[in-house]
Length: 171
Image (tube, rainbow, N blue to C red; front, top):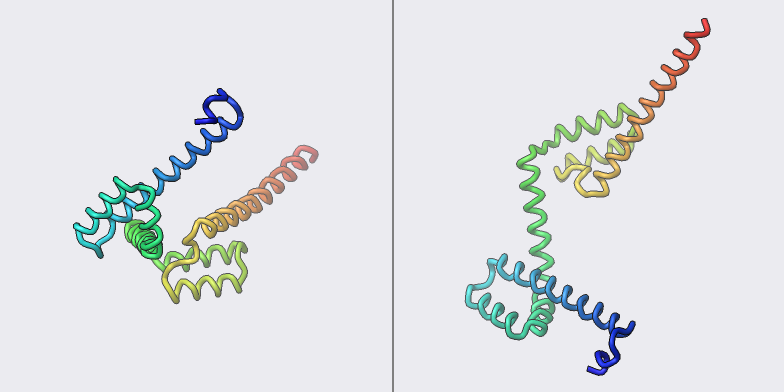
């Protein structure tokens, strides 16, 4: 309690910020551990109850123990859940390899991708069926290519219209 006798100082402010930070991290880890615990199907309800009791009464120790002993399993379950969500989204949206190959062909004809890129992405589509544009980076690159292609086409049309309109008045 030595810090609080000084009043409001910079050191007290930093201690408050540090305390709030640790509380937020602890609360976040508690939510992550509880969500992983209740998502699991490989342990019984009694083991889950023991973990819950431990998390309530010995929260810091139990969180650290759970992360140490179940960390690898948590990562594997998160990857599995992400894959299931991705597959469900593809099922709902109607992902088709043929549609993706047709889109790739359109990009190749527009000049956005080279023949080598087309062959590589088509081979990836045919081999694993995941598609070339699955992650956020790939989606961003696809969007950027579309913007560049559209801008080039619109720029040529605008330049053509401007020069035609400019010279049409002088004739």
